[in-house]
Image (cartoon, rainbow, N blue to C red; front, side, top):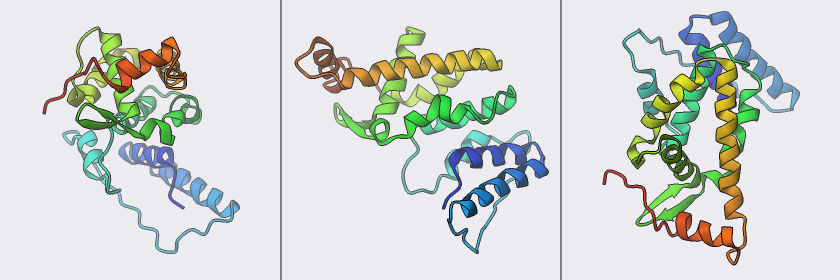
Length: 207
């Protein structure tokens, strides 16, 4: 039974802060929960600690260590950045995953759909459209993560502001998904098919 991603991220943050007591405590909490749920914890548990200096790029290391056999989505990088910010501004650590991100981890959002000659996950497509709408500027596919962090940094500088920002992101995502649920013979359904699915307007990438 693998640890939830938010447990992994919290453990990484505590390690970077050299708060080893908190790091062990959160891992122990996961092990205890696994035992209570009747899951056998593997006897060979390897814990890898990476101590970063002030000059190390933790985001680059996060990308490099992804060994699940699938490329990281732009949304995966954004999720990691968001929860790093959560620790920096000392926001509520337990509610953010359920409140602001878990909906994005379901199969519908991660399913790949055709965009011209490219296949992209719905969540990455939505984030590119959303950033284009918010910044009122063209956002290239390759620039989604960088643009998001630049746009969100000031808007996530305090817990209340960050939660408002993420709530707005989630509301817009729900509207985006609701368009896909409309029948193709409705006005909204036709808009979704022509603009999103057939992509008559195509955000460019560096290809």
